Length: 437
Image (tube, rainbow, N blue to C red; front, side, top):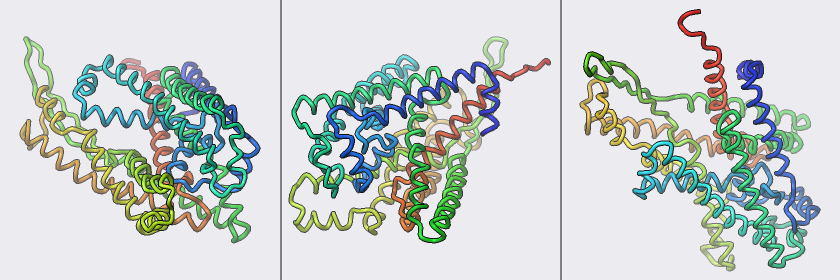
């Protein structure tokens, strides 16, 4: 990986793209430290230093914003609205025929869906910004902090609207920065910003474990966490690269005097076809019971007390529910993102077939059978990656949003591998010498 970056810096046009990407990253991190108007910066720092929010979903959004959410900065919402909008549009593509038709139109249809994603991102940013401001005004963002109710000293409507507009504009700017990286930089812009947001808290989280350690001034715990993290990275790299290759052959066709087809290729089916989406879905869904309890106001009733007692990190019911939800959403997302019937029809249209399998319906059934079999280990792997760090690192003072945790390590490894592949492919294109030297 380091060799690929070193070779890229020796290539003039790739060096310009890398420096442009680094410049955008600096702007992104700078915006994550600029507080929005109407917020008491001193009180925010007091509450952040005293305690971290125990809210599961807030912690997830804070992870994707690089810690900007709890600092209540202009980039407080980060790229979470865009991620949510992209997932919603991808799900609606299966349900709404108009969106499905746009997806099949090629580049023009994709551009239209991207425009819809932008509009939905702004709407979600307004909604989430309003919720964040309301939470900060009520003091619920930092529960147990004496200065939590003084985070927003002026609670007038004008200041509230200004705060929401500022955070919405910040989300729009983050979306624009991500698209700039995609167009003029290296890799997928949104993925790069997501990677930077998670990696931003890596060093501080590791050092916090060292400070909280008790054996050899914390260095033993620090070393164990590093070793566990490296082992998990190796596991994630191995599984993310694993795929089942379905061989496909295309029959020869004679058109005039020319022969077409007769080639062999394969359909790559990844073991983890769903990526990190099931973990995000499960985390968001598990937050709903606690949200109902918070808005009900009556926390002393039997059902609300049971939810507060059992639906928290580390409890057996919470862990079991989280694991089952991840497995369910892994199958659900794979079912809507990969259509065996459509793949089989396209193969049949262009004269392709799987050796030993008849074209058409038998091919679709075979693809569905293989996909279900490899999704089982993929879903179990996702559940274990999401849960094992939470239980193993709890003894070292880490939480579920620690960089070696499930969501973060999947994103960091996935984005890193994809970016290195893009750099290597561009290097290969520029260094291609042809058949004759």
